[in-house]
Length: 125
Figure 1 (cartoon, rainbow, N blue to C red):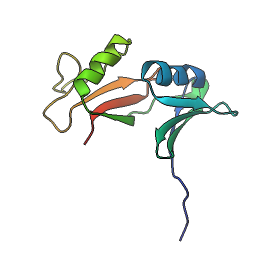
Figure 2 (tube, one colour):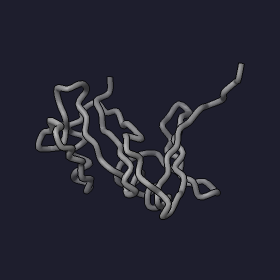
Figure 3 (spheres, rainbow, N blue to C red):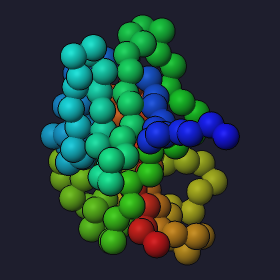
């Protein structure tokens, strides 16, 4: 049997320093940049997500790359909106004025990072 150590996921961005600054300064995540120019989002419990550069070859993922669980989606969205975050509006989705979808599973709102990757602020279960 293969003995996996600590599996992790990753996604590309156009510019690592720009993304690291957004994740740290706007979203408030624990992020670092390693000596190879990669970003690392530290999620706790030794879990991490690798953020790697693709420059102009980057194409945003067409799905949510990272879910950010919170106790209160409404207040988290309000705080992030005050920091300049714009929440996505998807046609046909029953979203409130604040961009939060309620009553169709856990409360959730979507945003994009500077490279166009989709993140979600979602009710913690």
